[in-house]
Image (cartoon, rainbow, N blue to C red; front, side, top):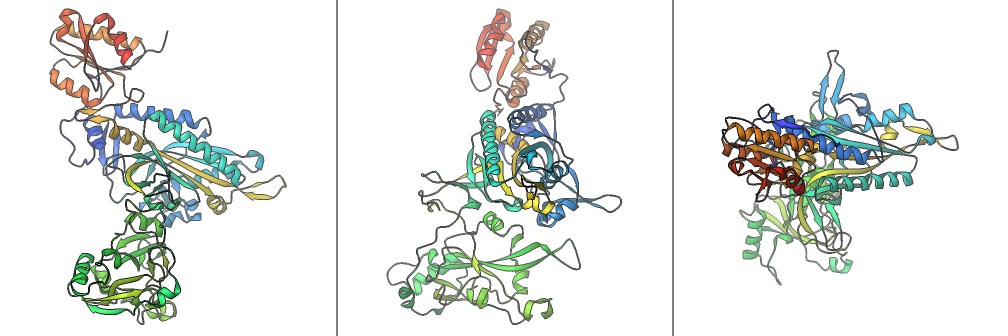
Length: 616
């Protein structure tokens, strides 16, 4: 005999469905998972898992375990961790405010783990000492914590979430490449088995560190990640896209450029106003001025986690940085944050402009910032002795398109005035370049494979070649074949388990509710008994018994005083693949069987199980 399926009676099931969407829900997955009784909100970004939700979650975890067990061994770390290992890798500071920090009753510092690199590294260090012990890959499925400033979209960006994280330990880069490929292949199998569409894109490593980095994104209109693709096969997260700079401009061409000129531009503090005013009053000889002819300089306040206030250890010292981009481009906050990580970044506010009066809002130009803009007096509230050499310089970073010989219309550092024809390299310089401008559809792929198209996706997985960053910081060495100490090289590989469930819910629903794939649904069959007579419930009881004996899990709506309309609505909301209705047709010996998303047929009582099995 085969395995017997499980019977879940709705009269006893710990479940309450909702007819209205939660007021804080923005996306379909969040609305439907709460309405269908899979999860309940406990606090912003924190959810309680109810029986049906756990059944789906455990099925996702089972698929992940089956694939991971082929290449790694499972362990389990605590979520509450000591401060010291994270100090050794500087992540106690680098993680910034997203790290949950707590103190015990003795005043010792702990954290709720966002990731477990340090602990995996120390565990291998504790147990392994020889090259003969390697390679080894370990994984866990564990709850993680991040103090998100703005939790959103239910399970997609929460403050508590379940994650599969694994780590490979190899003697050299060749071994790391092999372990990385094993995990990459395992991830493809996992996402294929889950039924998730995915795209593998190049990514940035961020606070994780390391070299090679790729993301597995599930294309979705509600995804937080923008990624790009080209006809020639290039694919990358927008944060990882590099800009193709223009061809160098010859010295003789630069030498022939006219001198820069400061002109009056009243009420033209915005790019659109500036372009319109320039075309009306200072027309270009051969074509109209465009936004791409202007140089927009945007001020941000940057707080490096390594620089904390002497008066308040929790407060970071902020300093301004100016980003220069062509006026037809906006600054992409995610690209900016990735470029300046692990520093925290925010746009400058009115109070910041007051503190640095040389930064004239709307009319800021390069001549008071970067290499040409040392301040002769320190900002208000700072002592000259606190600033190197008694001078303070505001860094100036520009987009890679701003190369030597390019001429720009930009601010003259005076209200209602702009400089026309200011030439990079001749009239001003920058401290460096930065990849912070938005990526646009039609931009050329950095590998020359054609124009880029943009799409959005939900990050399902991320894999990194960490290299030796954590092993060096924590002293993970083994004796090589020559008896000499050698630093181990590592890889890190994560899958968002609860996020995968949300992505599946996002991709499998309609206007009536959820519509789970067969292999992930909380049950295969939703059996509905409609009517008041005992014969309906007796027949439904027999069908439930037969279905479970055939090895199928069944949600049986045996609630006696609930209307058929409510039962049908719940069946469609819960999203089980096959719905069986015992009702009016019973007098003729017939029962309705239909797929969750499709039309039903009436079949004799003796053929119900066979018909259900044919639909699964």
